[in-house]
Length: 182
Image (cartoon, rainbow, N blue to C red; front, side):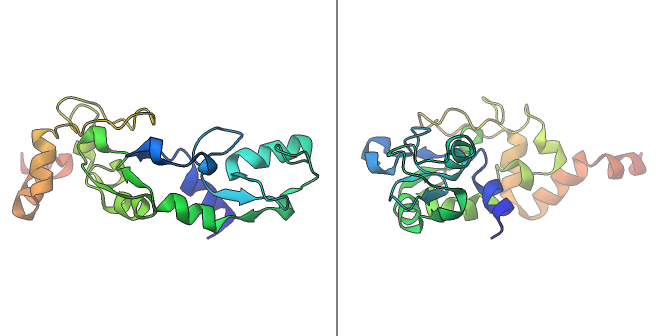
């Protein structure tokens, strides 16, 4: 994984921990006060989120905890912390839109690639904010609480049903096909 891919992976990643109280205080970054994302360990033993420590080091060139000298090249990925955090149970960030997936954080990226509620996986007619969910717009919401899964709209439920109904539904809303039939 390249540096850019790693940065993209953690950018704006919403995580709904099922039991936030059970997450150890040792798994929190002292800079952002959130559970580590892409943890980096300094030679002195302190760890920080990559997105937090890099800007810090551009300004101060020392560890935020003990002020010992450190530079970006001395940091290394803290895979042990990442594995511990990856075992935590989380809900899908598209939960408000209707997804009811719950699983380990380390499996969330794989789920999001195939999640029916991920906007990347939706046809254009379902990407409109008013057609995805009957009671909520497409939103990943606040990390502090786990939202109740929204009730998917009729279009979304038909789309999820699959088989011939999915093709029929897509053809109904495909403007190119509709205009050539008229």
